[in-house]
Image (cartoon, rainbow, N blue to C red; front, side):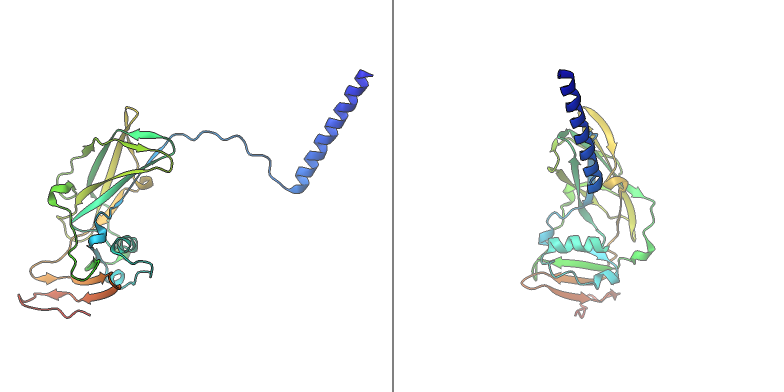
Length: 263
């Protein structure tokens, strides 16, 4: 009797299993996913032209085509306009802050950071247009943009290319990035040029180089182009109390008391 009961239970179990498999096949659902495999710990490094003090005003260089563009209606301050202009293709000039950001898929500490910035032979893309217009943003009429102090310069692209090691410790975790700024002097050349940012980190007592921006660490900058015998064209956005645009044409060989008709 006991053996017969066991056989009956086994048959019932098998039937239930077959029925469930048929139901799963008819429903078209996918089989359950395999158990998660722990991802390898990684640290990623992002570098961008920073916006330190951008709310106080700034200027970039842009092509004539970019300078004529109108930003979206939701761009209502100089910080937002700075980000928009860089996305559109405007280039930094002079002494520009750069923001280095660490992100990771695990909790870790960046014990120190090695940074090197040097010229790069990558040619400036011809289809971007020559950056010949000063693109200026003022939070309000009469404001004076804030520029980094020469004493803050950490790197000179067209000067001494020696690396700098920053000993500050940065705690990083998923969803909790860490960042800091370095100031790069971009003067010393004519026209648009490329430069490369290289970053290494010390983590867990070990040092390694880390690819910047997913492996693309090349940036472009340019000179202002102005001097005693030439005033570049200037497009100025004044953001308050209402957003307005003023354009002043370029002037060659200006007289000392010459005034430019702007519109």
